[in-house]
Image: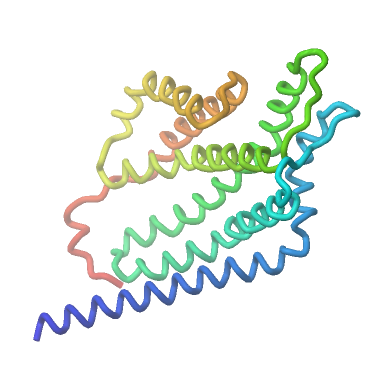
Length: 250
């Protein structure tokens, strides 16, 4: 009897998970359909930082026959996923919320919201701060007699990699708060490891960005500063204790 109850409970969770995944997929598709008509404009907006620093006689090119069609729609689909992130996180929250304790719910809600905003902030930082500096540096370093003509697909892959790197790195404060709150480490222990964290930030900057010092530094320095922000905010969060596991779930 107990086995049947557990089986039915598991089946119910799987059905709910399927339904929420379907809702997420439908949400992304709806946003994509709404943006599809503006695919060319969205790509042009993405290309502005590079176009602004290209020489007057140069332009972007497409080396693949289908690239002028597929590159803008690929970008639009990724934009649709990014815009649907709040709804996706809401579905995840609604799925796991019944299994959380009262204090966990109070903590997770602001962390989910802040992680979304930080991811968007990382993308905005890359677009408005990093791209103009990096592309200006690249174009200025071109040897004499070399015509700069960037392929639109290669450019898209390049900027998406940077967007992901900066969006992910801006999640550092949230990661620190979770580590301290769960008791995996302490604020003092992280503070003592500051020199290693700084070195690690530059190593990650080297791995996650193109092989140039400027973009590596522009990623490593914000990561270090965000680490300090996470330590500062951790003063307001206390690690969980065993007695809280006795709380009654809402």
